[in-house]
Image 1 (cartoon, rainbow, N blue to C red):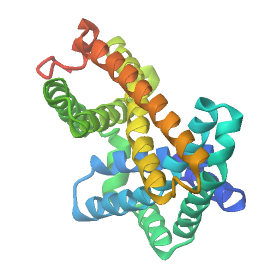
Image 2 (image 1 turned 180 degrees about the horizontal axis):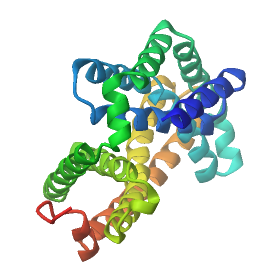
Image 3 (image 1 turned 180 degrees about the vertical axis):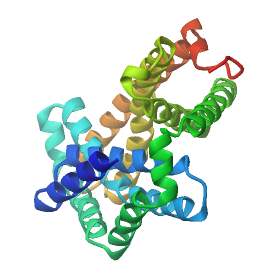
Image 4 (image 1 turned 135 degrees about the vertical axis):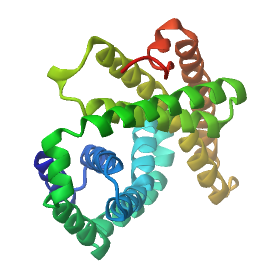
Length: 273
C-alpha cells in the first residue's frame, strides 16, 4: 500500500514538473487501484473517500481523451492532413492539461490524499492488511464476476454503446480484484482469468477510445466554419471515417472473444473459488 502511495506521489510530481501523457495514464491507474482497495472496506469513511477519488479521476478524463485523440490522429492521417488539425487539437489538449494540473494542486486533492494516509493508519485498515482480507477479496471477486456475466449478456443482446461501456468497466473491476491476490498465491485459473481480462480490456479500451474520439471530432466539426477551413473540415471527415472503420473492426473482435468458450472461465459465478 505504501508503494502505491509512493507511486502516486511520484507521478503527480512528474506531471507538475513537466506534463506527460504516460504519467497521467499511470496516475489514473494508481487512483483506480486505491479505489479498488477502498471498495473492500466497510464504513462511511472508506465509501466517501472512494467517491472523492473517483471525482478526482473524472477530472483527468478530458486530458486523457484529447491526448489519445492527438496521438491517434497523427497515426491515422498523413502529415499534410494532420497539419490542418494539429493546432486545433493542441488548443483543446492544453486546456485539458491545465485542468489536470490545477486539480493536482487543489485543496480537494490534498484533502483526499490526507484521508488516504490517515486511513492507512486506521486500526480497521491495519487489520485488513494483516489478515490479507481473504474473505473480503473472495466476495469482491465473486461479485465482480457476477457483474461481468450480467454485463456480457446485455452487451451481446442490446449492443448499445452504454452496454459495451458497462462491460468494459465490469471487466476492469474484475481484473483489479484479481490483481489483489499476490502473484505467487494465484491459481492457474486466476492467471487465466487475468490474461482474458487484459486482452478484453485492450480491445474494449480501443473501442471506447473510438467512441470518445468520434464525439470529440463532432465537437471540432461543429466549431469549424467549413467555408473558411475546408481542408481542416475534409481532414476531420477522413479521420472520422477511419475511426469508424476501426470501431467496427475492434467491436467485431470483442464479440468473437465473448462468444468463444475460453470466456467461460470468467462467466460462471457458481464455480467454487
